[in-house]
Image 1 (tube, protein in one colour):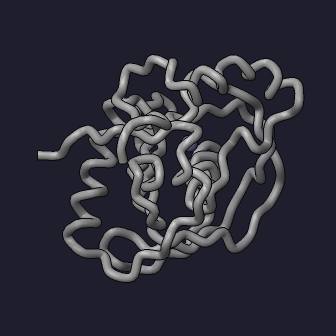
Image 2 (cartoon, helix red, strand yellow):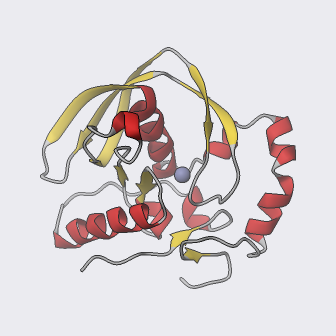
Image 3 (tube, protein in one colour):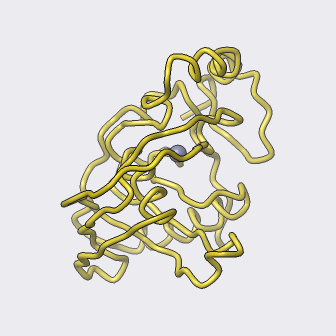
Amino acid sequence: MPKVLPITTYGRDILRKVAKPIKDINIDIVNLVDNMFYTMNAAEGIGLAAPQVNEGISLAIIDISSLDEYKNEKPLVIINPRIIDTNGQSLVNEGCLSIPEVRGDVKRPEEILLEYTDLNGKENRREFSGLLARVLQHEIDHLNGKLFIDYLSEEDLEKNKELFKKIKSNKIVTEYPIYNSKSKP
Ligand code: ZN
């Protein structure tokens, strides 16, 4: 049975580290992916990277099919992803399960060309645009120790200042289990 994993929140070191490449897609990885989908759905997220469940490895999942206009989009598992090329630019309001309640506009390329390994070990090269490209870039940032708040304007950072303090001092309340900066591991 898959289980809900606690989500690491802003302030924990693992969210700022570069994830390690995965060499062998073994049963532990397959089970982790199962648990990550279960965790993401329970938290009503549309993307989740391994460092967000305290695993410093280059793996993320995406599923935007809970949104009406994307209900035919298949869930994605990306392993060791590399963005090869980008095109265009758009400004979209983002949030993150690791930074509860904080929102802000982030400028990113509109389209990406991505290489990644899937859960079957197959190499893929695919173009993505729109919301999928957006979520993929957000999750791939997590694998590089980067967070969406790194792109926010001074004004947006100022607006969210109290929330950052609340998260770092473990006073944030979430509807999903979290690892805050005091809990182990
Ligand atoms: Zn995130």
